[in-house]
Amino acid sequence: MAKNITTRAADYSQWYVDVVREAKLADYAPVKGCMVIRPNGYAIWEAIQQQLDRMFKDTGHVNAYFPLLIPQSFLEKEAEHVKGFALECAVVTHSGLERVEGEARLRPKGKLEEAYVIRPTSETVIWAMYKNWIQSYRDLPLLINQWANVYRWELRTRLFLRTAEFLWQEGHTAHATAEEAREETLRMLGVYRTFAEEYMAMPVIVGEKSEGQKFPGAVSTYAIEAMMQDRKALQAGTSHFLGQNFARAFDVTFQNEKNELDYVWATSWGVSTRLVGALVMIHADDDGMVIPPRLAQRPIYAVPIYRSAAEREQVIGALRRLLDDLRLQHNLRSVLDERDTATPGFKFAEGELFGYPLRLELGPRDLAANQVIATLRHNREKVKLPLPQAAAEVPRLLERIQTDLFARAKKDMDEHTREINSYDEFKEFIAADGGFALVHWAGTPEDEKRIQQETKATLRVIPLDGAVEKGTCILTGRESNRRVVFAKAY
Image: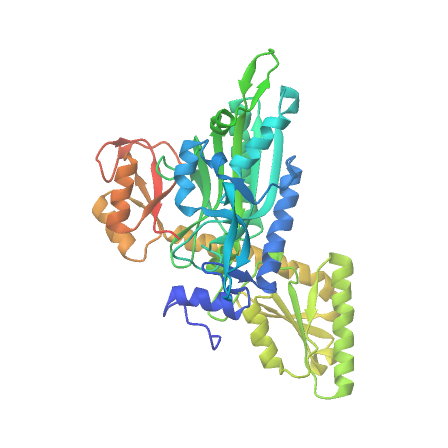
């Protein structure tokens, strides 16, 4: 257990904050509600960004960039959208500052004719541009993504999970038919699922949001939901079928193949730096971070052990040769900790805190035995690797770590997902350890609010792969055809 990290058992919420700060992922900013992402945290975000960017481009998308400031009138064009975001908007009303005569303070000057909203999301400004770019079916589909920051006023913040400013990607696509747009919505949901499970080693439930939980301005919203170690759900990514709502609001029409004018069909989809928080809460332990190898920019942490200058030269030389082989043969980057100011024990603890997936230890005795010791971060297993074969074995160990992490998280999710058939049983389940409650549901948004008020649980998703099953809604007693997922959530 790391000295400055509260245990999960003692206080899970404080444990999370301690891991984020002690592992140097992020810190509180001097701007209320905001955070500073430190290099260790940004390295994880970069790895997320790089992999998702490849996956987006493999599905035909291209990147662009749109303004941070959005005319207030743009948000007013789509009624549901402005209603959903109005209370979260930060507004720019002046164009500069001036010094108050005789005082050291500044005041706004140059009031703008129209206020600008710092983007809470970019649908409005993007669709204003799409009106200029789309005239014919030949211009479709338009498949654009942007990597950006957004700003939403938040009263209760938590590093990575909920901050006023955060980083994300937002895809915005335009299509000639509803069928194409719906297909795109589900395709990108599938990309998110693949990324979460194959790269983050994070199992998810994929489904549609209820009417009361969908994105403002969307016809349908879909999401991936993951279970954290405290059994709470985390919405890890969303994909929205927007229908023709934004096209109508911004008058984006096109001439179809029948030479008729029609409104285009739209989607939007996104994930954010919330994924870094998810990585902490699903894999980290009381000693710090545990990073899945496929998201670790430097998955190998090498520690030389020596007592004399001669031993130092021999051990470090051997480690460098091994690490060079791993880089050249397998494109695996590493950290070789050559500090003479820190003991091996201190280095081991720091390596665990920062979450390097695999530690390599080499000392004079290991050199004499022609071996290197590999320690797996997630379970502390030690493996002796013959030095001549180590470059071939290390990639296999990293894949094993990746597989183990997913299997461990999947087992935890499965063990805390339960079919529940009565409201009393539901309340007991949520009040105890909690988890994912699979219940029959035929309620309204008002019924959802009642459950949230009484239990703090919310309807997370209607699973896409859920089987048709006759039953009775746990709250209303009405007939139900399928189960949905309720859970407490972040």
